[in-house]
Length: 162
Image (cartoon, rainbow, N blue to C red; front, side, top):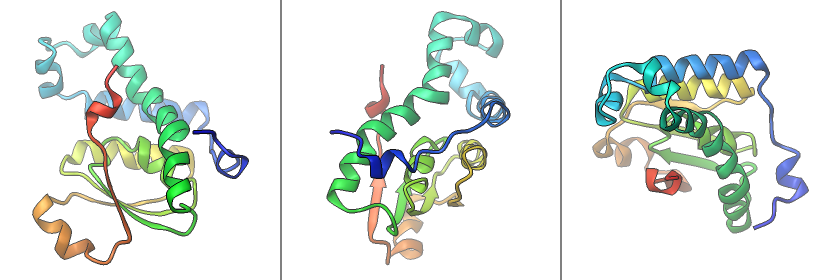
């Protein structure tokens, strides 16, 4: 799908300071002990220095965001214009998709069960100058809290596999 001028003119850029803040938030909040244990290491710096760690970190900092902007946003906007839409994003993770949706003029309610991921998502939104409403909510609470939303999105991490 092609990125239209209507979509691309809404892209926002974070300055170096904003990217550094998101980078630090990822290191502090996202790359947790359990994340590292899944990769059979306990040393964050050693992991991030390895080829796999560098790739993983780059993907979390940049690639997911770029992929979402270039593939998912045009597709969604073609189905329903994002500007002025209200979106409930289930499992927002570290906010790559949240920023991409919000910069298109959507009101985004971003939820995730992981508080650490929400901290990164909030920082990412701040770095890109967009806003979203964040909640740590379980699946059981979704219907009660967000029953009147118009568009509900949930993305599997498999979408982002390398």
